[in-house]
Length: 48
Image (cartoon, rainbow, N blue to C red; front, side, top):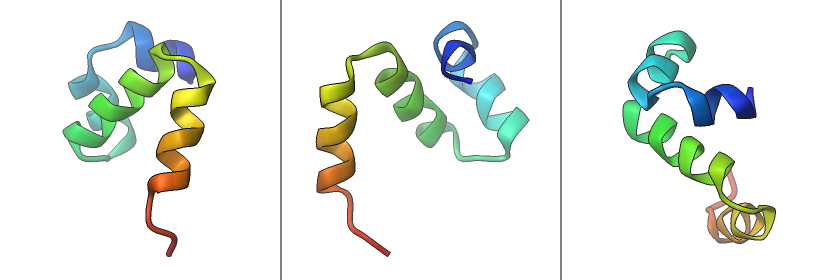
């Protein structure tokens, strides 16, 4: 799935998964970055 996030446009991912396009865009950014950025975002996200 991570490869698809990097290879496919965010709008295609959003349509395929039924998620908001901005969410797909953010996932694509995280997928192309390194894991330390991913963990920083997860740590900063509100729990719930």
